[in-house]
Length: 158
Picture 1 (spheres, rainbow, N blue to C red):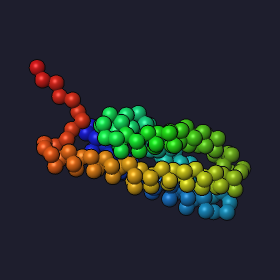
Picture 2 (picture 1 turned 90 degrees about the vertical axis):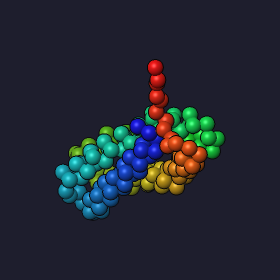
Picture 3 (picture 1 turned 120 degrees about the vertical axis):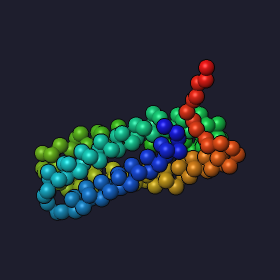
Picture 4 (picture 1 turned 45 degrees about the horizontal axis):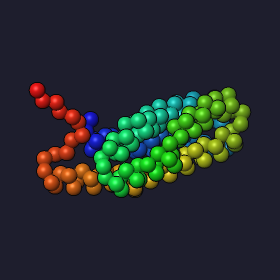
């Protein structure tokens, strides 16, 4: 998939993650655990979406951005990798420790930890949207102005 389309997909996933985080946040506003089935469903969807998103960034996007040769983009990409590279593992660890039974038994602690991890996620999403993705847009806009559409897919001719 061309990098420009990959960025579009990642931006759409950001929107989905924000929406799912809002659902979970609304459910944890209750002073006592309620709607635990809804909460478990929303958390599962959020985890699935987030882990897929972060793995795509770490395994596909960041290596492709480093390979562009654009110094600024390579620098920002490396900063993101160093600062936020373990976020997927941190989220999975948080999610696995909070089983349905533990959520019900330790509601105030679950609420605090959820707010904390969502704050970390929000920071990453905001920074990517503000710092990283615009650099990719700029790179592709500049390349498009110079010639035929930019693609990072390899074509083999015989």
